[in-house]
Length: 349
Image 1 (cartoon, rainbow, N blue to C red):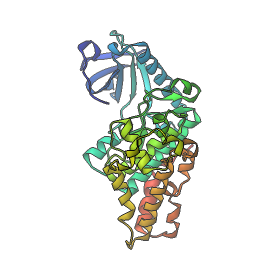
Image 2: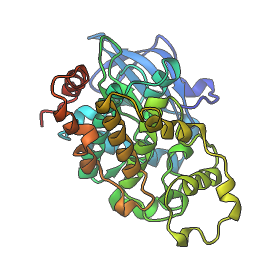
Image 3: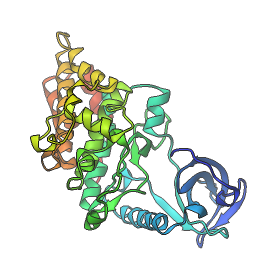
Image 4: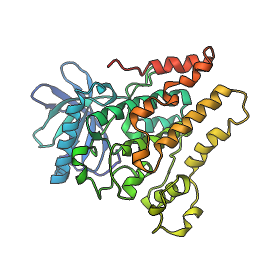
């Protein structure tokens, strides 16, 4: 969450107890603030279990803000009953203290993928794979429910724990999510953070679950390079980068400036391209093939036209996420290590 100013009446006080119909919670400290909300570490008084409380600021209680909150509440309640519920942050309780703020009580997770990339740096391909598989599983589950997340980015992917070799992740923050039944209400809105924004948002095309697959295609290279694929903060620059790097239909190019091909490539895109170049001629054929399948999946996620972009279910059957191409190398350390890591994100559904 981006940091922003708050005033005293919009902050839950540290070391105070707030109550719902079912439980009492001790508020500890504020850990994040946003345009409409604040997030706190807290604990359930009786059990001592750690939780997180997301509170809507009173000054943000406009009609539009409250609608977003109640919509998010609806999605979180629906996700409780998904067969893929383990891929999403879990809502535990709701409450409204005397101040009038609407509060969600959610499970406390560990740290975001963004924080890990910032503090530790890029992650190896063998760790990227199970992370991406879990996110794809989550997106497949959302599609079954008709929900589009619309704000997928490393900040909204959290590790469940940072102990041992845990690589389990969950998708969080459904504040900008929408139901495909109401997709007509989402046009003209600035969905998705700019570096992860799909072309159909930029070009005001049809919106669907492909938004999230494009975002995942941007996240995958970032995991292994540590750098945003399209590190830009303006939509105009993003459009130029998409046109420079991806095949775009001619009819989308007619009104665009002619200097687009002179636009400088981002460091993230250059490093992504270098992944395959760096292994050309290397003796480890298994690693070369693996990187080739990694890039193939990213390119399929970054197809400009959403109707031909790979879906979450199709991605889950892709060689990079099934490691079927490792069959040729049954006894290598690379195969054994990846197989063990992939076991950790198996789902019993």
